[in-house]
Image 1 (spheres, rainbow, N blue to C red):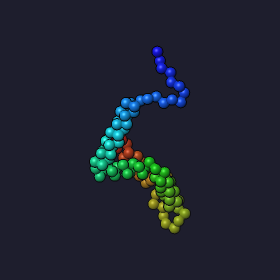
Image 2: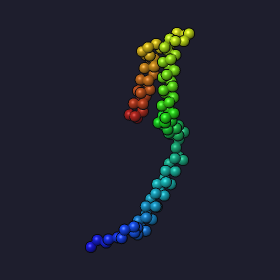
Image 3: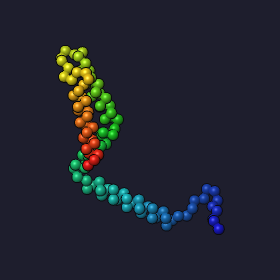
Image 4: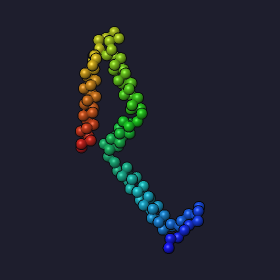
Length: 106
């Protein structure tokens, strides 16, 4: 026969709570140990990943493309180095995309 609890009463899971708490503490300890043992390359990769996933990265790229287009629009006193259709910019963006695909395969 199933036990019925009154509303608002919390079940007594003392033994289960202790096991869960111990597992959480072990996970935290293992994660701290793993983070402290990272190599320089791993720390740099984590920093680059964190930056490339931020809004600052998006804003920086929007600014970069805007400046590139303005400099190559011919509205300034010097000759554009990459006139429309911006072949050099396309090459740079394509190679960055290709590098990302190579890393994903790795």
